[in-house]
Length: 194
Image (cartoon, rainbow, N blue to C red; front, side, top):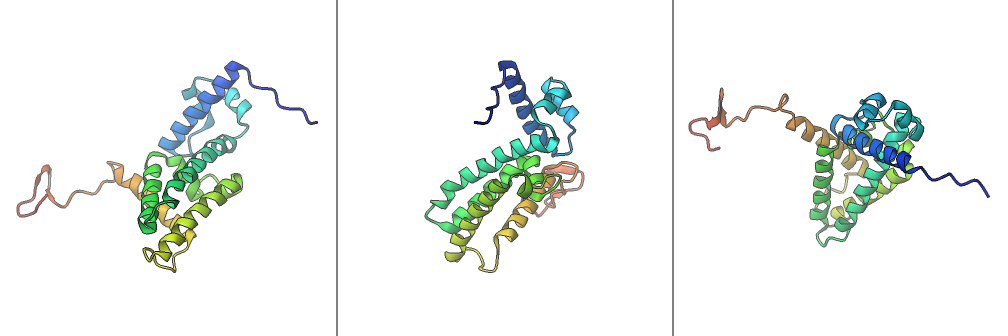
């Protein structure tokens, strides 16, 4: 019988949990480009502690991404049981875009930026694509989505929407509201309804 790994000491378990929590928050806010040393600093531990639990940045993100993708798969269950397949499909897409708005690391992973989700957590990626395809197929059968759209098209569209959602919420990239006058964001332009 192979040796079972020893359970973590209480302090080591707390450190691991803290690293995962901080890494999730950091990746969600800033994406995958954040260095391990910065995650360690924010978690209040040394870089060696992070590397002891997660030998590579990819291993750290893999633990987080697996959890996040399984969360999205679990959330899909309610949508697959909905009576109106078209509405369920579009509601799930909206949920995915909203999740991406709050989680840049998830967007990066789904887009394959800095992390190959299909290679790192292939079972989770397959399960995610399967539930997305099931919702798509049901919506297509109901006539709510064109039949020539594939699940990879939907994933690409979703990733693009997630990126644009985050971009449009960035005040440095926000487009001026055409209903407002120049230099007067609080007053509508005469003749236009705001």
